[in-house]
Image (cartoon, rainbow, N blue to C red):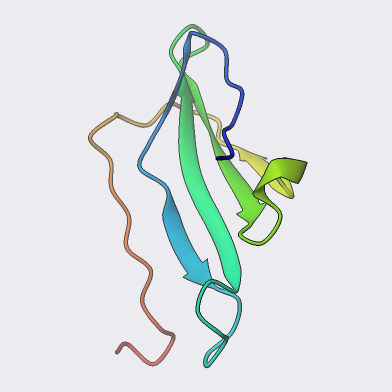
Length: 81
């Protein structure tokens, strides 16, 4: 089992799997999660390689604001399918 080490004041959203490319083998892609720092009132999008979760996030995108814990996202193919 792999886990992300977060501070007590950092609350993660439900992770979302995004395929690396159209037609990629099952499980080949990235895992994204929104982490809200309730002390700072800001959120960060974490990105992991699904095959190497234990190595930690590939990237973090810091947002200038917080997102509510009820926020959910959906990824759709570029052609709208």
